[in-house]
Image (tube, rainbow, N blue to C red; front, side, top):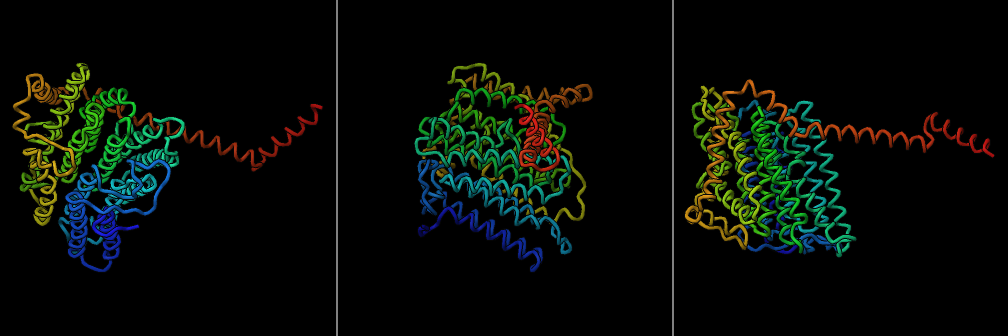
Length: 547
């Protein structure tokens, strides 16, 4: 049943229509008109998502589902809770990516970046379908839809063989995890034999979808791709995973399962990812490790803060905006106009460092206050140590912003649209960092204080937790530059160890061996091949001779 009024299906249908229209229009209309059409569809999806976040919505009920209904509802799609702000964030990133794809058009560029428009729309629509899902059946279908769209986005770009193997493993492991959602959907209302089974499987699915370390299947695979596809490949799964985690936290009767072990695992993940970001030599992979560090910080904040909506929504918005800004702009082609593009990128780095009057500042204050209230100083010290390595990695990433290059003749035509793309991402980052109460309209129950009040109530211990990583990270960055040759082998080995590629490669090969053995046994038992018949005749002869 479809009710009248604006429904959560509106932005999904707009993006799917945009994918079909831009695919058809690729052979019929020129590039500039194609860019304008893509901007119109992306803008329409963003406006509809904004309206869904601002006003009560009409739910969409496709069919009721009698077993366990996710989030205590039998609706198929809904914009209640934190679904609306996460969907708004996804549509905003989609709009920024579409704007960045419209840069530097030439009439002979028939096979340029505009061929990505249909895939960008499909990935964004799959992410919105996942976020708006309020029924386990639609959630399972959206999970598979999102995995396939991410694979199409990855295959559509020029990737090397190693990256393709990583993307194949990511798709397989993510699909296997999606089966946990199917298991939950088949459970009765009593959660089956164990009351924690369904929340545990949903927690696993949310962590895998958000690329929580060490379940970071898609994150490093996306690091091998070119912008802006890598921004979409990382941001959409993060928003989808955090929306599922927020829904589980809000509507689960017992809260998040295994909260104590989750705090320990996320704390270790924060340190491991910070070390990997510091040791990584490649800029794109370093940015991916920074994103993994922030994902672990969000999970830690959720596990420590309990049912606080701002604990998951605020750092998730900060991470998605900063990650998109770091990916949407290639620093080697900026030219003399590059300072206008470097400014939003520098703002993203400052926010990830947690500097005052940025979104990251409020997130760091909330996290350190929660850790102090927890009464476990070793977690607080571990967080400061991890922040030190993270700041050192961010200083190295920011060092690429200093050098300016001579612009070429093709730079100026795409300067204005590309600046518009990063501006729509930097604007909420600035506004929410300067005045956090602006985000209170995104979800009911969020009461964010002003920055001046946070600074006034911050004690010496809190300022020490915020400033020590900045000073230590800068010193560590300078020391790393001075001892780069001597520490290169150590950093490479550390990054290889913490990357866990070797572990997943062994698991992958072990799975292939087990699969080959099972296929061989199946062929023998079915009588296929001379070996099966030989074994059967030997068994019959043994029975006859044993009498």
